[in-house]
Amino acid sequence: MTEDFYKLLGVQKNATQDQIKQAYRELALKYHPDRNKDKSAEDTFKKINEAYAVLGDPEKRKQYDMMGSEAFNRRYTEEDIFRGFNFQDIFKDMGVNVNFGFGDDDIFNPFGSARGRQGDVGQSILYKLSITLQEAAQGVEKEISLKHSVACSRCKGTGGEPDSEKITCPTCEGSGYQRTIRNTILGRIQTMVTCPRCGGRGQQYKRSCRQCNGNGREVKNDRIKVNIPHGVMDNMRLKYEGMGDYGMDSNGDLYIEIEVKEDKTFTRDGDDIYTQISIPFYKAILGAEVDVPTLFGSKKIRIEPGTQPNTRIALKREGIRRMNSDYKGNEIVEIKVHIPEHLSKEESDLILQYKKMKDGDGEAPKRKFF
Ligand SMILES: [Zn+2]
Ligand SMILES: [Zn+2]
Image (spheres, rainbow, N blue to C red):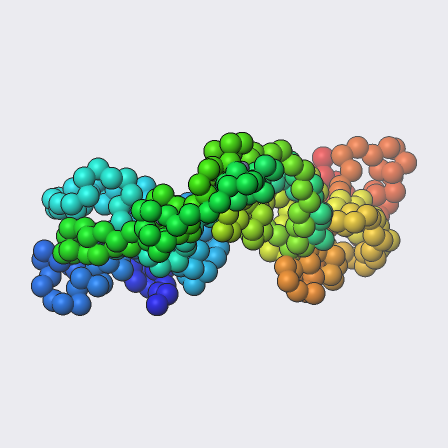
């Protein structure tokens, strides 16, 4: 049942927001039930709306890219997907006036939300964390300060007074759902929504916990440890399942968005790192052993006699350890050759001697030289 939203809209994974919008417009106009009387058009119309609700929103798109379509669909209900999306405006923008039949409800949910998520689920948390290139290279354990919801200490997260008894929810009679019929552009659609009174549990406590007013949670500042795996990239989001806010049925997730700080010495390209060193010209000519910086201390390397400026030397496995792999990238060292700007009399005599040896008596080139 999970479909690739990019394929549905016929765009590339790296399409711009404008390209996505354009592709959606064309498809929406083509499959709009008012215009297309084909029976399968309705279904296609639903799907492209869902695809656009996700890909048209950079934040949701990022989550989708990160989780993949299957995990994304497992995690988010259609209600989540359409939340905050104003299709009425988009259609108006296209010059089509459509009555969706939902008023100005910001939860645009014509397709029901019975599948997927139920009950009381904690919020997911996004945390931004800055790490060094060295930490990204080999992984690191970090302690972070997190303000999050945890289970209420009085009711242990149940939401009921400790001695209160449980009763069947009178609104849904224990089913946890409410059935409603909505009139939509796709016709009359029966939707199942989670019972607002009991949050889908079908039962409730006779008396709510007086510390948390029945929501089962309290806010706490914690310091928690998280493992950052080696090989993480800048802007990557890592998911820590169940480490978000407390929920009676399941916790939300914690997402850590990584910022890899810029490094003074190295630049990164995937698993490889790049740096430059400068050596005096005579070492380039004669060869030498020189120190080069690596991510974890300096290392001696051999410069061969006759090394040309901008020569690149690869240090195997001195780069970044790839995520979920034993592969390690290389360090590429670019050799800059330094030409002295000032010479002492003695040094300059030596160079002149060398010049004479190469040019004979050196009369003609001398004029050019000065
Ligand atoms: Zn409580
Ligand atoms: Zn209920």
